[in-house]
Length: 209
Image (cartoon, rainbow, N blue to C red; front, side, top):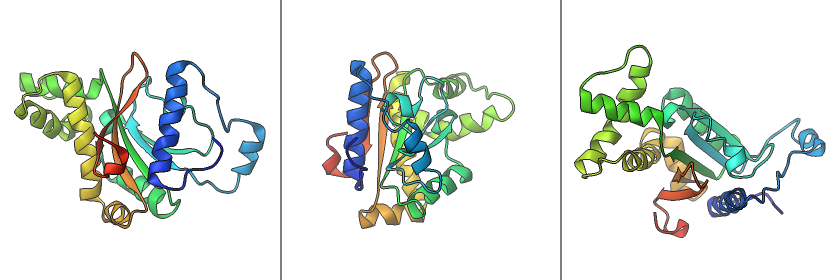
């Protein structure tokens, strides 16, 4: 990475480039040396926020071939939004000046699978897992209403809805997007081939989604 991306589109292009290297098996492992560690000791300026699922196969710095200080990462099972997530995202946008928020879903998502099973059986899980299922349920129901009964379609729908909800729930994020200082995108990760596919963006500059 020759320079730090400063715009939402530059940030997305950098993530695409890193993902392409990962897919090809040509990772460079940038920004992982001792000098980089020292340079970041007093401050950080990540160029992207990646809000993704907690799944162990979805390590953002690996699948996008990144290093220290490149991304501000937030992870919950099923990329479920709560107040702590929103506060973390607003910190990245308002304090760190990060230009891109990526919502990252993936195939074979356990949280969405559990929600699909719950919707179809009418049975909710116990404990705090119930909260996850309840928060994902609207996405699963919307996918079903659209005729998408496949799990992958449900994850894509959940990724899209999550990205849209961030702007609905946070005035800070919505304002940054309106000003052009930031963008919110949704990306679907394919576990088998490693490809990160754009599935949501309201900015035509990012291409079809």
